[in-house]
Length: 130
Picture (spheres, helix red, strand yellow):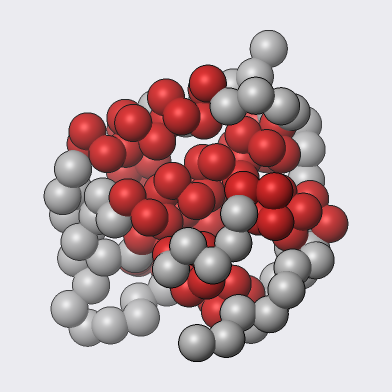
């Protein structure tokens, strides 16, 4: 059985991400839309495929939903990693600051769910350039 995060758990990760990695002085742990978080969780649950496909849908959904005032990409990355761990899988992405560029690409819809799945499972994805 697949474990899915609750809205509250995702909000907890937003608070955590902002306390651990303060990117801007104005960063604020504020929820802009619980509904967008709920829709993202539902999309993840409904996604056809294995845990890595669901994780890709979760990551892309959280990044693009912009449900928080700050830390949307950081939150999405942490939630996705936790989702995989809770489902007995490992994130295949190396701990590298360059991955922030990939998350920018996710935000700008540069990557498909299949490409994101490949990245989080095997750490491989085409470079994002503006």
